[in-house]
Image: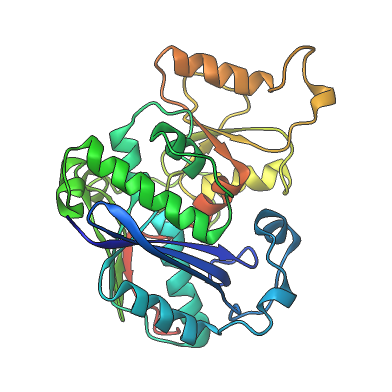
Length: 321
């Protein structure tokens, strides 16, 4: 049976390079054998209210926590050369790279896989591929989401369920089963974990409304997809729509067969139709899903994680880092 480490980061603010907590789960012999988690003093010691409301970690809690160099050393010691696995690895591996960049540190040498990439190929048609939905698909129990240790353990359980669904025991065979490639980071270069089909699907077409400096990433969950929004967001709706376009996607006002993702913000119950606890757009998305149309319902948090995912499918380290 393979041996690997599931990992999850929580961040202090909107930037990926602000880790304030990490959770890790060591998987051996088909089960989680050991877990470890600890707080981190982020390289830029700045916390915002949105992130603190999600995970409950405050500046006072991280004041005397290990700084990033010591934290990374501890993470690598726990992994001990094993493959890292994350649910939304583009985000978590970006945390590692960006935190190193802030301090001018070399990137570590790691190989990684993404359970979200595998889940899309393993269980097509889920209403959402955020971690709670995939854990539910696997028959897992509810847990304290946004707790790094709990999320790492949940990602480990998803990875084990994916191995079981494809009747394999090694990550190599799992990725081969879904036609996906490992991601890699080394001191000078990185490549994302993605479907093999994405490697040949780069498009040079620029959307006319994209920002001049937008860089499209074919492995980003928003790339090439049409996104609609429902509910109140933590940013102005127009700003959220611009983020979609700058990621290579397009936006729609309503939900139709052309929409691939519905992002759900806060729902004011007083504004919903009598007898409903979801918006009309949400109900329409569920209706389309039942009819076999592929549409995913995504939380605001996962939307912003998608926005902050890697800005290219691979790349060399900037000489300015």
